[in-house]
Image (tube, rainbow, N blue to C red; front, side, top):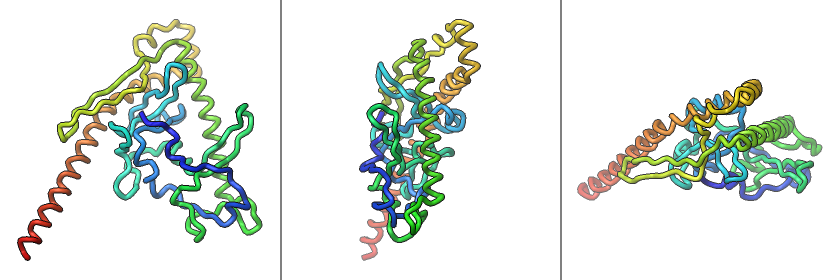
Length: 262
């Protein structure tokens, strides 16, 4: 599984002085995510995401966080096409938030809204949405992105509590998945965790009742059901590989015919 914040190359605090004349176009080109094979997912997104993606838990023995699998190999995202368009049925909030992100102080008490200045959607030509008006005040767009980032941060913290509960009850176990790709190559995904269905069923009635009241029990089973999406994703990869092979063969044939005509 890839490191989750690699899409942010140079995040700096938003400033009316530095970014007054900047505009941004978002939600059109997702090329910035083409080299990540997983991204974080907050608990509130589980139901929407599980229709298309596999939800797992990434991290280590100490800390984990939900993620969705986007590719079977490192630096591979099968949901971004050659034009940068997102081809999945749901776009994770982590990506919809980009190029904005909160940076926290060392004590996690203060959060500063930042932006990735390397994002190709930024410009000074007025294309897209301006972030500040002529007087240097935040535009409605920037206010909405600030509200979105604040909501995401709150949901992120709630999700951390859910993961803490899973760890407390020892419900997570290391997992891996193996696939046979269309070109005969074998791919293996590892470095993630899944919930043990057996351990979940073995929990005491009081704990299960408490998790049901907080919707955490539902989240557990949504995650488990989403594991069935690994096979459809393998088919998606196979179809993509077949299309690329056919395209390459077609171009080769066209070159051969061109030489023959000459």
